[in-house]
Length: 123
Image (cartoon, rainbow, N blue to C red; front, side, top):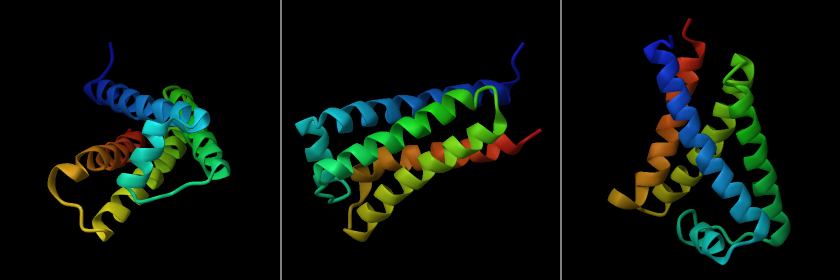
């Protein structure tokens, strides 16, 4: 039987993995909706090369999170990558004066990444 902490780790990992998967696919194929989101939320206008780098970054984070379900170091690394990505977007949003609902998504992803980091180091 899984402990409550393990259940939360799996749930948070699934949430972050889904976000990274959607981000990786959207960036890799250059979906216009994704480009618009990157322009509106963190105010980034990425070149095609930068979009591919974001896609690779997201795939790496996704793989680390999935492997991390069996390996604590991989889970920590995946959580750090997810935190860095979400934290960067959240920081840019705050810098540009976003408030309220506009912060919801990346507050969720940043908080989830921090929670995963804390839970990953618990015995």
